[in-house]
Amino acid sequence: MRHPLLTWLFYGHVWIALAALALCWQTTYLVTGDRGLYPCHYFVFFATLGVYTTHRALSYRRALGQPTGRRYRLMRSHPVASALVAVVSLTVALALATQFPLAAFWPVVFALPFTFFYLIPLFPGGPRLRDLPYLKVVWVALAWTLMTDTFAAGAAGGWRAETLIRLVLILAVALLFDTRDVDLDRRQGVRTLAAERPALTRQLAVFLLALCGAVGLLVYPSAQSGPLLVAYGLGAAIGTVTRASWGEDYYAVYVNGILLLPPLSLLL
Picture 1 (cartoon, rainbow, N blue to C red):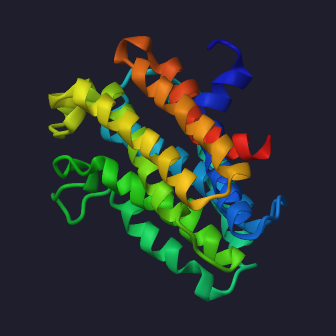
Picture 2: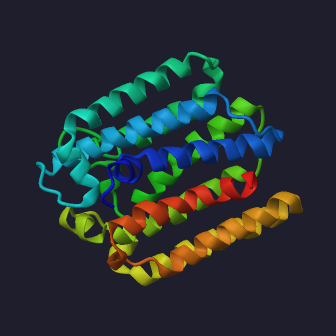
Picture 3: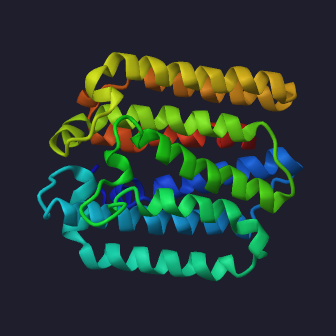
């Protein structure tokens, strides 16, 4: 991944922020049938971009600038630009937040602790949420579900079974990413299923992605459940062949790309 634009797209967290926006759009579309983009979608995009860029900076500083992975090189090569992306994104998100009633923000309020304490110790000298054995993927799934589904559904005026599907989808993708982070987690003393049973982790992720498609068949009409089944099936196929040996580009493009498959299938 040598082109600067591709580097910023996939390692500057733009790709993952687009996935968050797309999933937020998926929820509002499934609730209302409206295909439009609204402030709630842009709020989730900029909040995700700002939070992920900030998290990367905190992770880089915690490791004293020693990580050599590609996802850290952008932070090391362009610290000022990365900081600017984080500050501008969070500022725009805060500006967009003024357009929503306070009652719409309870999912965001619940997501904040999972986001903040994921990399910040719960108390001085204490563990971070990601340090708690086997629960790292759970915090990610809860935060993403609250932001991309519960918040979006509330803004659209209702909730559907998509909340459960979204939780399972994010959990599956987070499990796949744990297969990439085994060495890092072991160095930091974090116990994960992927570190102890990598094959089982992949199998569980594939099962969860297939489960998303099966539940979709039960709760959505064929015009929606058909494309979603194809999307989750493609995601399961990606999960089946996922190995840490494929490298960071594979995870950044394809594993993150699993999140974009369901909304793109609906859009197409």
